[in-house]
Length: 143
Image 1 (cartoon, one colour):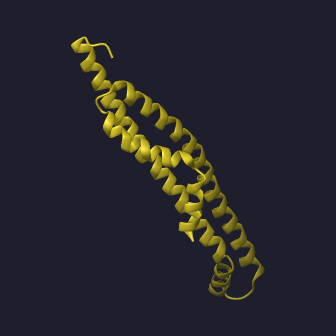
Image 2 (spheres, helix red, strand yellow; image 1 turned 90 degrees about the horizontal axis):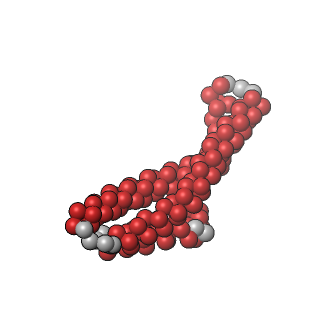
Image 3 (cartoon, helix red, strand yellow; image 1 turned 60 degrees about the vertical axis):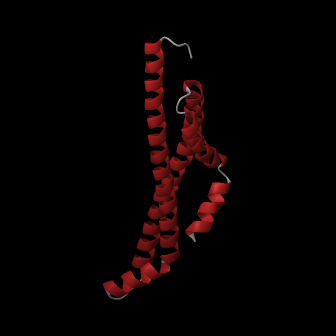
């Protein structure tokens, strides 16, 4: 269930493809400060857009959790009988909500990890850019 939902989400986000391409291209530009700067800027812009989506996905996952809990409580209190029996029936009646909640949480966590991974790539590229600029400054070469 999560895979089709995730693939549908990916197809709607062109920035994901662009960031993945830029991540590969960055390796070819490690000795060119101008190209490295351009790639860092492009990746950063894409990650800002993906970051907005990530925040929305995290909010949706939290919303799914809260909705399921309220529905569970409603089901639980509407039943009569032993506590364990009521718990089991309420859990059974909210199973679909639980599945959706897990999928939403998975997608939100995936994007959060994606953001962290690519932020590290940008930080590494920025470090390389600083070193290149320092080497250029020491050698007196104009970029």
